[in-house]
Each structure stands twice: as structure tokens, then as C-alpha cells.
Amino acid sequence: MQDPWTQAIAGCRNVEVELSFVANHGRVLKAIRNSVQGQCILSAPIGHQVIIPNEHGESLRKTPPHCLTQDFATVDRICKSVCAMHKTDKYWAALLSLTKDEGPFQRAWPVIEEEVQARLLLLYRPKSLSSACPGRTLLQVSSEVVSDSQSDTHNVCLSDIYNSKTSSMPAYGSLQRQQQNHTQVISHDVAAVKLCEFFDLKVSAAKLEELVLIWKYNALSTTCPDAECVLRLYIVPAMATHSCTPNCHWAFADSGHLDIVAGPNGLKRGEEVTVSYLDEPSLHKFHSLQRRDLLARNWLFLCDCKACSCIRVPVCPWCVGSEEVSMITYISRTEEPIKPALQAICNRCSDGDLRTEVGYFYHCERCVFDLCPRCAAIETSDADDSPFNGCWSHAGDPGQGSESIVGDVILWGSG
Image (cartoon, rainbow, N blue to C red; front, top):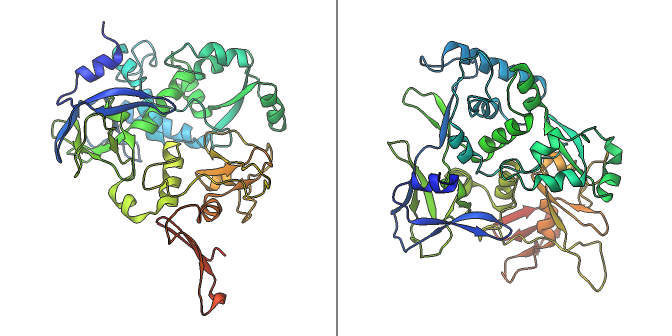
């Protein structure tokens, strides 16, 4: 039997790419030969799709059946009752991605084959999310449990964590001490637990959460001819890296396939395939700080593409000495609170809790100070060779305030 990756690639057409692994980055797609503008370098079939009933739990056609629309409404109520982190459609898609042996008893839910699910489980999902996110609670996990879980290629961390005997909830203020004692602390999705209990599922809450995360961070949304919303997963295209200046773009084919098409400059052999996770209006409307925030909130990474790299990781302005101390980037939704029971406040502008108000921020491990993205950009505004970067004030009337220019970002009133 072929491994899931081989199966996924074998089902594609016009394959002009190969799967490659890049250290500290993961799986990427690279061109196996030169291609020209407009050339389709990959056409991938639907890995799995789920029809989403409308906000009233209704379907616009006979499928899904009435019992499913009722169950969708139930899922929606459960998600809202626990202030779930993700939208109801992601939990619904996960529930309809279970195998025959995992689904609910005596309910007419569609199920998928084990080999199809195995391909879905190849897709990216974060190992953990912060307990500061809505709808999540803390789990305390010993370092031994986390170490043992690394051998599980499908459920890294999550499955062993949910089933751990050391799953008692720690007091929030004790979090820092536990981390110092090499005890990993992680959170879990309350909605996933509630859904498993309510529908009496034969799957662990950990696996259900992983399926939710796979749909959250990999799914594309489209509509059917009758205007119903459909979530789709495409296995191989999901490996394409994001760039705000992509060399390719996605295109839906009439057959339901998702095509990756080379951009204006084509591709060279060995070049990494990039697409934009943001839509065209967002790419043109937002500057680097705004795009980075959107990507950090929705896909949990700090974009370092050519368009965004003009804003560098800042050196801590408070750690004065012969050795510069680079600050660390914290993605707000993936990191446990640095200072338990306290808000993460920008030590430059005193902005509110950075863990909830921005997608990412910067932290210095030496002095334990934080910088919001805006203040960090100002700190690095003169770190580039561009003659425009830096802080500027009105020569004739300094009272008008000042502005900082960093690449494509202009920050007014920053001085």
C-alpha cells in the first residue's frame, strides 16, 4: 500500500513540482523544471469537502439531510456556549471527517475512508494553542509524556496530552514555575471535548481537535452552483508557502480541481512555489504591519517574505551594553502567557494586552520587556540602507509631529 504522500501526489495532474523539506520551515513545493507565465504546474483533486448549512442550520438543497442540519444547529449552540475559538463550520467539517468506527452511533453522518483521513492528517496544524485564547483550558503535562508523544506522526503532543494521567489543571500563577521545572503546559479545546461527549463519538477529543485545526488552517471556501458554502481541503497545494509577492496563484477549475498557475515571471527549476494566503484586495490595501498581523492571527506565523522583511526583529532598546540582545517574536495565539496573571503591555507605548489585541509582539528574555509591532517598527526604522527610512519631522513646523517610515509603512505621530 502506498504511503499517504505518494497517494496524494499520484492523484494530481500536470505535476511540475516536487515535495521538499526545508529545515526550520517544513514541507514546501519546488519546481522540477522551468515554467512560463500562465502555465499550470499542478492540478490537484479535492482531498475532502464538506457542505456547510447556512446560519439557521438549513441547507438549500436536499443534501445534507434534515437530520444533519439539526445536528449542525446543535454544534453551533455548543460552540457558542463555550465561546469556541473557531467558527462552527470548522468543527462541523471535522465531525464530517471521521471514519465509520469513529462517528456517532445511530446518526446518518457521512464518513470517510481511513486512507482519506490519513491524507488529511498530513496537513499542517499547530502543536498547541495558548490557554489565553477563548474556549480553551489548561492541561499540565509532564516532559516524559511530551517526549513519548513525538513518535506519533499523526497526533504529536495532543493525543498523549489528552490521555495523560497528569492532566490536572494547574493554577494560573504556577505556570511559570512549572515551565522552569521542564513541565510542558498546554491547553485544549473545550468545544471538542463537549462535542465528543454530546454525540458519544468513538474518537478522542485530541484527534477531533486536530481535525478542527486542519480545517481551520488549510481549508479553502467556495460556493456550489446553488450558492451553498463548501469547505474544501486540497492536500498537495496546501504545501505551497505564503508570500506577499507570490510567484504563483491558485485557480479553481471547473472539474473541482485546484490549479497552481505560474505568475508573470514564471518559475525556474528548483525555485520554491509561493502563493498568497491573503486575497488580492488585502495584498494591495494593507502595508507590511497590517499584513503581518492578519497572517499571525489567522495562520500563526510571522511573514518574512521580501515585501515584509523591511521590518526587522528589533534589538532590545532597554538592554544597554556591549552585546546587542535581539528580541524574540511571540505569536499571540500559540504562546502561553509570559507573565502569568498579568497582561503583556508594550513597554514603549503602554498599549493594552498584546496577547489579545495583536497577532504577534516582541519579548526580551533578559529584561522581560515587550514591544508591540508598531513600536518595534519605529525602533528598526533606521536599520536599513533606504534613504527614506527613519523618523521625520516638519522642517518649518516641528509642532506638527513626526512620522516614521519603514519600507511601505508610514507611522504618523510617532515622535
